[in-house]
Image (cartoon, rainbow, N blue to C red; front, side, top):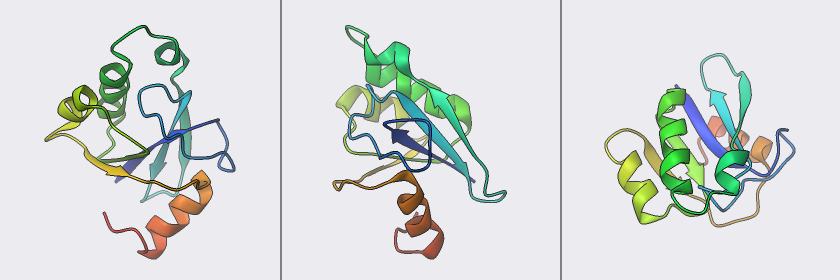
Length: 109
């Protein structure tokens, strides 16, 4: 299963970005292989409107079944609805630590 995480950068030691649509990067974590990849999202950072929808489309296209961020706007949530389960995280947390919480079952999918 693939999990998408909005990220402030392209490293596992970077933090979850609380801004889903305007996150610079998306981390895609594959729970089966343990591999991660980072997808650039800079074009949506500067978008005048529709950033959440475009980022949601990118997440759906990645094949992720779950996505983590700080907040999902109503249009992004509607785009993800019935396709990808969204999870809001309201704490400052590194990507690597969030992945560990998922792997250990501290965060249930």
